Every structure is written in structure tokens, then in C-alpha cells.
Length: 158
Ligand SMILES: Nc1ncnc2c1ncn2[C@@H]1O[C@H](COP(=O)(O)OP(=O)(O)OP(=O)(O)O)[C@@H](O)[C@H]1O
Ligand SMILES: [Mg+2]
Image 1 (cartoon, rainbow, N blue to C red):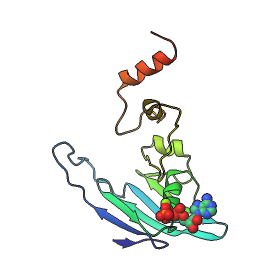
Image 2: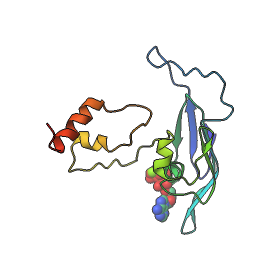
Image 3: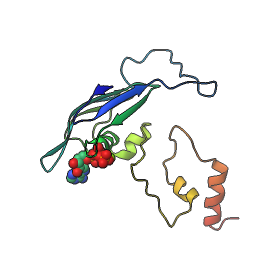
Image 4: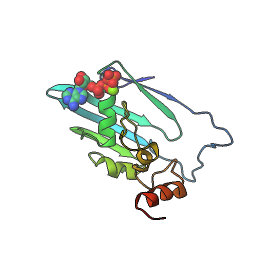
């Protein structure tokens, strides 16, 4: 465990790989962490929620961020994912500076987040909620035939 800012701590562990999820093989080794956060700050009305946060997340590892209520965990996620801009510091993902970029741009670059309190659209079905997520994201996708059938029937097509 390594100390971070404002009472948070970071834990890392190497995930266990099996035949279904072999470790990525890269021809040239990465020279920097997949996600690098440097000296990130964010205040709310004079209260320092983030006060110089440094964080490295290495590719192929699982990293946990722990801390008491109000320590700034969600604020850090917001600043990294572009939901709110940091006041200073830097966020580099996969070698690109994403500091202050909009959430949809950051998502397109492959950094996808979840929310502490998940809120869907209650009037939409589960499949319609899932269809709202951006196209071309890495990871799981909806089978195209399933999504296509639903949108066709909505538009009145046979
Ligand atoms: N939009 C905001 N306006 C004002 N203060 C805020 C805002 N967002 C967060 N804060 C304050 O910043 C501090 C850090 O909040 P944050 O939600 O990041 O903590 P947390 O570690 O995620 O807490 P929890 O474990 O309860 O989820 C808290 O004191 C909170 O009240
Ligand atoms: Mg939180």
C-alpha cells in the first residue's frame, strides 16, 4: 500500500491469469504506467478535496483506492474521467495527456468509468439503457443483431 493524498491509499495486486484471459503480450515494453496522475488538485469553496494526488496504474494490474468518507476518492475519479476539471496537475492515459478533456473524448480513448451510485433511465428498458453507451468502446459490446432488431422495431420497420 502506498500513501496518496488526503488520507487515501492505493493498493495494487497482480490479477491471476488463466487460459481465457492470458496476459497481454506487447512487443515493446511500456516505459510509463498506463494511467499516470501527477500533482492533481481540486478544491471546492476553499476546501482541498485533492491536494497533489500522485497515482500510477500499471497495465494488467488491479488497483484499489481506499479512504474514509470525504477523502476525495470520487473527486479523483471525476477529475481523471473528465467529469470535473482539475485545477492543476496532469492526467496521462496510455501515453496521452487527457487532462481537462471532456468525458466523451476520454471514453473514446479507452478510459471508461462507472459511478458510485448507478442511475439508469427508469422509463427505458434494460437493453435500451445499455444501448446508450458509446460505440467502439473496448470491452464487452451488445450483439449487433440484438440491438439492431430492437431499434428497427421502434422505428416501425419490419
Ligand atoms: N461538487 C462539490 N461541491 C462541494 N464540495 C464537494 C463537491 N464534491 C465533493 N465535495 C467535497 O469534497 C470532499 C471529497 O468528496 P468525495 O465525494 O470525493 O469523497 P469520497 O472519498 O468519494 O467519499 P465517500 O467515501 O463518502 O464516497 C467532501 O468533503 C465533499 O463534501
Ligand atoms: Mg465517493
